[in-house]
Length: 64
Image 1 (spheres, rainbow, N blue to C red):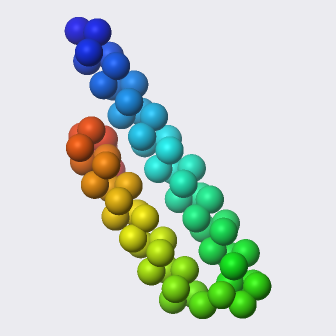
Image 2 (image 1 turned 120 degrees about the horizontal axis):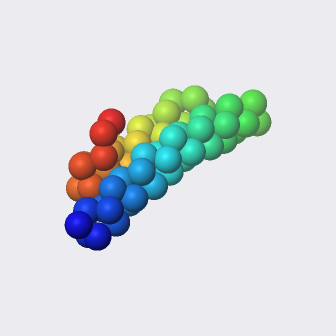
C-alpha cells in the first residue's frame, strides 16, 4: 500500500515536470528564434527531449 502511494506520487511529479519542461522549452525556443536560431533546429531538440520524457513517463505509467 505504501509503495502504491509512493508510485502515485512519482507519477504526479513526472506529469508536473513534463508540463513545466514543455513550457520552458517553448519559452526558450521563442527566445532562441528571436536571437536568430533556426526554428527547425529548435524543433528537432524539442521533439527529442519530448520523446525522452514520454519514455520515462511510460515506465511509470503516467497518463499522457
